[in-house]
Length: 216
Ligand code: MD6
Ligand code: FE
Image 1 (cartoon, rainbow, N blue to C red):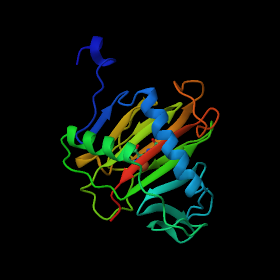
Image 2 (image 1 turned 180 degrees about the vertical axis):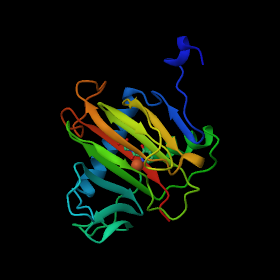
Image 3 (image 1 turned 180 degrees about the horizontal axis):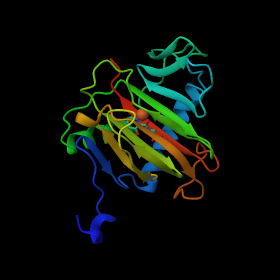
Image 4 (image 1 turned 120 degrees about the vertical axis):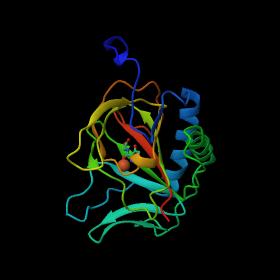
């Protein structure tokens, strides 16, 4: 690629689709209203990792299954770990966008049964990982970003693989599917003061990420 265009054209591996600014600020606020409802029904919590320390970000879930972690391991559960109530359902506002963009990306139909809500404070981050707790990796994962920019790292199929870094902005929707479903990835840092929107559920200087999955 010529040096002139290298900065303008974003090139990603097969199976990665990044829909920049797909959600307008009004779309983003409407989805965050639905996220506020989810958090009201299923309060945010900070899970303990099987290795001992607590996660840096707080999280909750919607859908028939929700991702949790404790000393017994990482897994999907049908109920909230402290209220013991079933997770609220996935809001239509995100479900319809996730389904149409998966189709648009050429990755077929998508029937998610789980949506992880990750809430980053200003100092939030997420270490390099791959999403490996789902039953069938043929299903993609669809990710929505809200609030401040995240410095996202996309790696290879091995932890030691080559990485590329780029920002995820509020309103971006990213899909990891196909050959890239099990790529390592993480969030290095959140960039304060970059959010184009405000909303009561967005922490000061922070960010919210939703990932829709098919767990079973
Ligand atoms: C985040 N995202 O953007 C973290 N996982 O805050 C993820 O961990 C992720 O963006 C699977 C697929 C897409 C993702
Ligand atoms: Fe992930």
